[in-house]
Length: 306
Ligand code: PXP
Image (cartoon, rainbow, N blue to C red):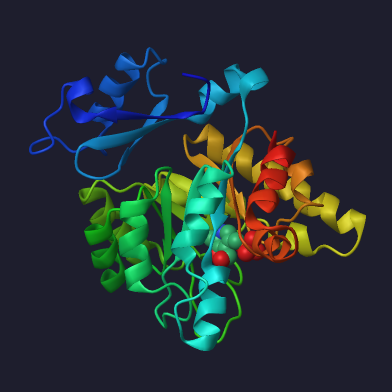
């Protein structure tokens, strides 16, 4: 297995019985690393359906084998659903987009099931779970109703995000210290179902420490301030904040993803931060796809992450 590639294992191949052993547990990770001949503590296990487990190496392997490391690309297809909802019909279907995105080489599909269902619908999520072959990252608000839906769908990762009805897109990261009890409760529910959890947070050291304390598996660093910086000095400051946040998260054993506002001009610089293993990008890819096609838009972004 190449560093940081995902690999699918059946429960049988690590000697687990799905009816009694939870794929999300540290013990499962331990046995999986043994099967894959990876150093101990270097694998996350995603519960991906009943019998197949997605094992993904942790950042330390990426660092050791930096030469081979390519950050993963998760493509957010919410905007395809937004276009569909504009006419209230069936087209374009985010499912069709997800298939094309995967064929173009993306490493995962990201969707945000919002409370107001303004773009992605429950049906989309259900069918995406059946359809996609890579990794399904479900973004959602940290509440019990959403957690129950996630436990039924079983995405490979849940990313908890703040949600306000009036916002155009997710503005700002979670305030982890302020909402730690609720977040911890939802994380606990998802962990009980074998689902790893990421918290979408600003690149702030206090929030990283708080995320670690309440047992998050990943953080997704909000790159909006970096992406929207008007002057290069401002971009430098934000880049530095992301670098320091990624380093601390990594040191604490959290997986590090990043996203929001990233495009073909600003993403390359972030790839110099080795702790970031995955970028979740939506608007810029779908916007470019309108002009050049989805296949080319995804391939161009993948090439930038290489
Ligand atoms: N990551 C998270 C948690 C998000 O909420 C969003 C926006 O839906 C993105 C990444 C993608 O942001 P953008 O569409 O600006 O690329």
